Amino acid sequence: MMTQVRKFWPLLTGTYHYEKTVSTRDRGHGVTIEAPILAYLVETANGRILYDVGCDYRKLDDPALRERHYGTLKCSPPAMGAEDRLPARLAALGLAPADVDVVFLGHLHFDHAGGLHDFCHAELHVHERELAAAREPADHGYFADDLAPAKSWRCACCEYDLVPGLRAIETPGHTAGHMSMLIELPKGAPILLCGDAADLTENLEDEIAPGLCYRDDETDALASIRRLKQLAQEAGAELWPNHDLSFFRARDCFPRWRE
Image (cartoon, rainbow, N blue to C red; front, side, top):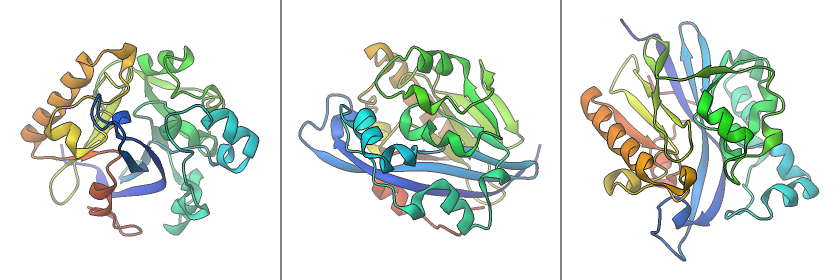
């Protein structure tokens, strides 16, 4: 069936700094990198879909909340200017949060799910194992109050098409229920959003697991990287790592779109 995807925007919602070992397991000690915090907007024939929603800017604006949430993390508090907030990015496209119909969360760490408070109206998609892990919480990357605005979830337990041309791909390992997304554009090669299954191009090229793995076991993470590479080869897709600033800058076209 022909793809229903019409336009695709990668959206920079902020940046942060951390030791490279956060992205590449046991590699990069003492090396600090700057990483983008991204969301992705997909316009389809059936509505608009966001993959991830970035951080909660309210936690960055309030000194007490900032210290409570970021004081013990292995990264700097994100830098997020007013223009980086998702409502501002959408406004630059002539849109409002209410114009987003579906939010698909690759996983529920703070830099991917924190912005949910702006999208309470949307249909929220997440893997059921991911929601369970966030509610434990399984690691320090989950902020419980990020999830509080969500009124209901559409929980998946397998791979599925959100619409023709937009497929959710199971890639566990970094977290329990991590999911990537394959996007078939109307023109050009498909894009396979890795999410945090691969932060950097290096994760893909050298098959290096993320620094943080679910239950501290890299087995699933490595299997997911290899599967992403195989799927990309089969689909003729371009693999997009999620926290690689050089990679993103080479493909940033905002406010223009890819099609």
